[in-house]
Image (cartoon, rainbow, N blue to C red):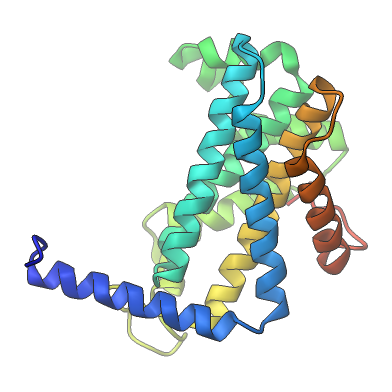
Length: 244
């Protein structure tokens, strides 16, 4: 006998049915396969980084951020395949913010412990998400605010209660808002595609740090480089992904 109340048990069964439906629909879809390989490669690289040798404090800080992205990518996948695209997107906003922070701390290595040990006032003065994005834009010479726009997109669609959030609560633009999970393959593909972009960004930063620290490329790095090169060539051959 299940210890879950009947309605919660029924909800869980519905989530598992939607997951199975999603897996059946994406089985022969090349785009889904490439995006999911990108996510897996970045997660595997994060786990490899967590297990890497060394116990200095800066390394441990970066490991914490790497673990955070691993967990958020796993949660986002679970939510998306269970019919909760908006909640998956909320996790993805966290991944985006952490990816930007990783990129910033790898650019400004002297700030790793300063950021980690900063009090609330210092964090608000120096390390807000907006200030991190602006620093990265200055480094790259970007003036189009794409980092900001991508962050705000996740805020509007998933992060904050507002009228825009209803877009991800409807199976179709014409339908009523749905209570509970639902599966709509176009929306799922868009979610997994955005997830792959975030996984790429996270992996690039982690791999860059590992390149600087270790002389030998490990199997997880080699796999990430192979998958990310193929993925980027397929979807972003003419553009930079860094400004996403």
